[in-house]
Length: 393
Image (cartoon, rainbow, N blue to C red; front, top):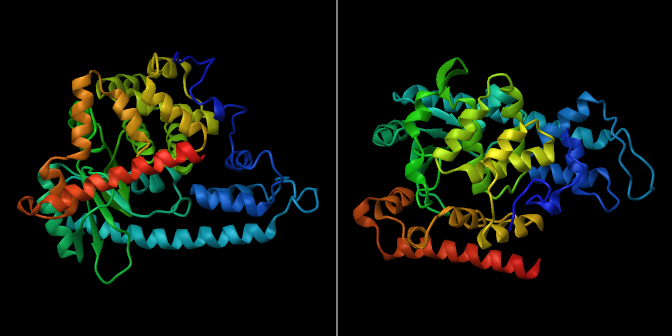
């Protein structure tokens, strides 16, 4: 399957691009009468409700939208604006509290830490703690520091717990007796069972990390090109299941427009074996949000051809199917040669014992048949859901 710009991989999603979040939401309900409740529900589902509120507030609600009952236009949706306002203020208050708790933990952790995803984006790129909801805080450490970080978080009242889903390079900590966000501690940017993991130079990412202050406490975030690289990998891991994942990338590009090193992004995406995840992330970001991405960057990252696995991935995404496990089709296609493909499948179903131990939050000697059965069961469930999506639409 030839892969060119004139015949894009996501033909089912092609069409006029959108600059504003509200316009993006309107696209989601095109082809049928839409009222404001449709848009509000879509915004909540896609993680964009706070951004929609800010957009409507800035424009005084002046966005004509066809009313499904009267067939006219409703230009001042005050009732829905109030609903969004309450959601925004609630998110702002909660996030301020959550970030104070995060800083308290960071002060106790006496090792270098890089803030990831929402923890890095909200205070720096969004510059508004109410603009985006959070489900956890993600931080990156060096693997050798995991025992020390674990000790510090336990002293702060957290307990280590296993993580659900596929085996990844992370452990999760939840606080006992108090509702605060879990802290996910990572020591790599990608799944431990995926191909090309050893190609990713974490040392280089640490060396180029930028200093930042969070609530007055010094910390680190990725350099702009590494932010995009990581966010692309993260968005693919979640199969673009919420549009906020693409909006994060859009905002990073807009915020670092003058300092973003595109050539370095292309070079390291190739060296790290991540050119496909980066290409798909940039492509969809540009498609939905009209993000200004240099054409030569897209040309350098674009795959020359698509195999059967990626064609299946594109087919499902075109049908609006964004389910766990779908990203495995892309990673499988990234394996060159039958031996690497077989090794990939083996690691997917039978992860290394040390990885299972870290994920399940147990000692390596405690890993047994039950842990492998759980890992295999999760993957079979993903495959079954994907087959159902393919067959049932």
